[in-house]
Length: 277
Image (cartoon, rainbow, N blue to C red; front, side):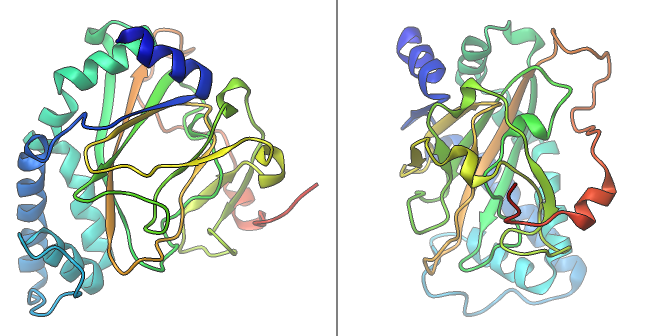
C-alpha cells in the first residue's frame, strides 16, 4: 500500500485517496464550527437567516450559520474560521493517526517531528473570486521551508468541476517556478487575495487535473506542484479543509514561523495580473 501511494505521488506530484475520512471523522469539527459561528452571530446581535439559499443542506445548522455570518460581516466570519484550527476539535483532526502516517511516509520524516498546520476551512461562494488563487506553488508562500506537503480535503459535500474545485498540474512538481506578485484573481483588486502567480504560459504544457471527489477524499500534493482555484458556477457553497505538514530538519533556520516571505510590499501594489514577458 505504501508503494502504491508514494510512487504516484513522486510521479505526478499528488495523490488522491477517496474515503480517507468519513463524516463521522468530521463530526467534532463540524459541531465546533457551528458553535463558533453562533458565538459570532450572537456578538453581532444579528438574526440567523430564516430563509437561507434554497440549495443548502438544511439537515443541520452549519450552512445556515455560514451564510448568515458571511453575508452579515465577512471580517467576523474570517475570524471564526481562523479560530477553528486552534480548538480541541481542530487539534484532534490534525492529530489523526492515519493523516500523520501518510504525511510521514510521503515526506520520509518521523511522525514525532512533523509540524501540522490546519485544518483551515475554505468556503467557495458561488460567483465570487475574492478568495481564489491563480496558478501558484505553495513553495513560494513558505520559501524558508524545504520539505513540506499540502493536504486538501473536500468537506461537507463533494468537489467537482463547476462548483469551485481545485486544479492541479500533473508533473509540475519536478521543477521550481518563477512567479509574479499582485493582488486580485482576475484584475487588480486590493480587497482580493494576494497572488504569487506562476504564469499560465509557463505551465500550459502540463495536464490540468480537476479534483472531482466526494467529501473526505484526501488530496496530498508536493510543495512545488502548481495548482489553482476555480470559480464556483453552481448555486451552492462548497467547502474544503486544508492542512500543511512540515519537516523542519533541512531548513536553514531555527525559527518556528513558517510564513515569513522576503518579497516587497511595493510589488503587491505595482504587479499586474496577466502580465507576460
